[in-house]
Amino acid sequence: MSAWGLETLWLVAAAFGLASSVIYLVNAPSREAIDLVLESPSKSRFEVGMFTVCKRGDAEDWSAYSLVPPERVWCYGPEYLGAFRDRASAARTSFGDTALQRYLQPVLMWNDIAFAILTGLFAAFADIGIALAVSKPSIQLIFICLAAVGLVYGIADVLEDIALINILKIPSLVDANQAARANFLTRIKVLAMTASLSGGTLFIFLMTIRSIYRRFSSLEKA
Image (cartoon, rainbow, N blue to C red):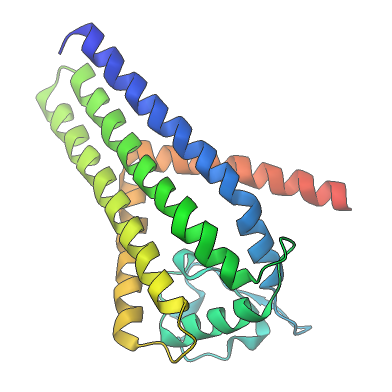
């Protein structure tokens, strides 16, 4: 590929990365508001981490835990999804809607789907750009595979968002098969994001910015 063509490829990747970053940061206040009201009303609170449900089991009594959205949990099932939905539907955010309403839209329905598509395209274009910039065929092949992984991440994340929306919008018992499918997509998403060099780097960068923002926000409130 010519130098002009490679530069164009990098510009396209940069545009997707910038758009993805903007969506992530626009979505951050809604996610912060949701996290805040999902804290447990119990005095002895426990935090739900990535692998907490794996250790405790899906049938655990989640009333004493500060819950997090299922997309950040490795082993969720119908019980955790039901506990999350019930608490989120009863908690009102600083935006005036319930945490469940805000989580379904705009967090999942618009922002997260847009973020998944843009990040997947960024990872694909960036990794292809790296593949074309190097001369070793073996390294080129590695980055072409990473570009494909970036696209897998984007597809899995979009399907996960749709699956969670369809589950959580219905106030009834969560179907175990639907929960299993959503959880499978969550795991594919996490693995693909981790394996995608460019996409993973962008996500870590954005998480760092969000972490700094949260720290300064907590200092201002204190």
